Amino acid sequence: MSAELKTPRRHRETLRDERTRHRARKQALQATVPYLAVVRAPRHPHVGREMSSQFSVATYNVHRWSGINGASTPDAARAGFVISELGADVIALQEVLRPFDSEDPLERIADALHLHVAFATSRVHRLGELGNAILSRWPITSVFTLDLTFSNVERRSAVAAQFTTDAGPVAIVATHLALVDRTRQQQVEQLLGHPRLQGPVVLLGDMNAWRRCRATRALDEELGGGQKFPRTFPAARPLLALDRIYARGANVSDVAAHKTPAAKRASDHLPVVARVKIGE
Image 1 (cartoon, rainbow, N blue to C red):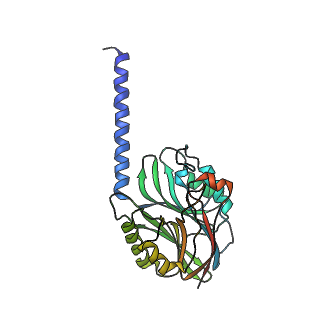
Image 2: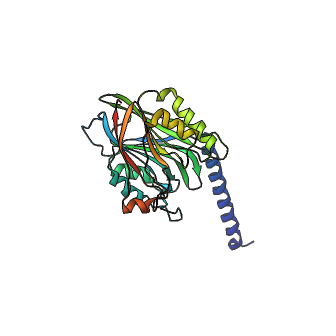
Image 3: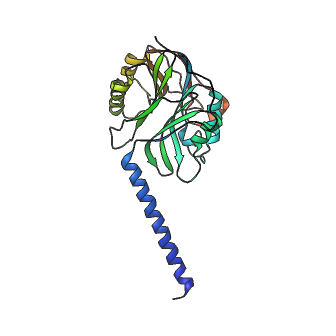
């Protein structure tokens, strides 16, 4: 048999070996999710700034960096520009994609904005790790993940970062709750009852609260304080208040959707911003 005929066979074997290694890697990651994947400081952090009892927060579903309809080629620069517009001290992100085969856009954004970052993987997407992140102007005292998977259909999690303020410690939690009412209720119960989240806590995320349900009633009763939330989805013409900011042991004020032209194009969700003061 000639060398010309043997080469395609060797090429096919190489491709088959690469696919096998990729599947093995993906299966190994899926078996261990959720997990804490990134906790790091920016290359050039702000120096001399301390976290006070009053600070600004934001929550933003970045839609895997894929724009308003999810059909675009992922471009993290669009969402990164919106994050820079927010100017918030602590930002929770959902549907963050960290690709396997290219530079991590989350870390690139954090470095560009001089922000500390923590990222927890909820599930392994075909293109990379998908999960929740927290960006912060201040160092993170500690961080942990919560497994909120109560269904074989959806893998969900939360990442909780703890900070020290001049009024004492506070936990900031970023999450993306389930679409199914019963599962979302179980997730809320786990969040509200978690032993490490019994002091001052700020809960930010895409709550998928598209209608009144037991989960949203529990959040309103325990953390809401009668807050009215702005509509954020779909970004171009918002109808639903899916993205919310709740707090226990803290006062939340000036809650608003971030409605700039860039925000209406970068994701299918608008960000939500607010002011927080520790101590009610």
